Amino acid sequence: VTAYTEKEGVRLGLVGWVKNTYGGTVVGQVQGPRDMVEEMKVWLSKEGSPSSRITRASFTNQRTIDKLELSGFKTRF
Image (cartoon, rainbow, N blue to C red; front, side, top):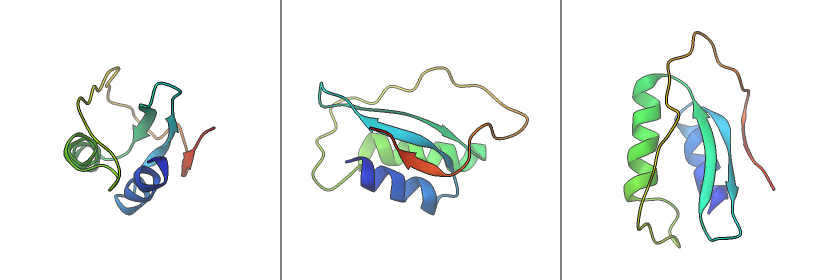
């Protein structure tokens, strides 16, 4: 699941990270232009990876930043 999310983040020009949890969910952080972040949120809520089953998407701690705090888009383990 995270490989597809990482690929989509890179495609949208975002930076951040994603991680699969033991509970079968995905957590992460995304930074970039507001419109691209919104597009990523739609993708995470409605599409996701081909093998995923999305029952709920929750986005928290959203804020505007002056400059990116991360670089690249990575999968964490």
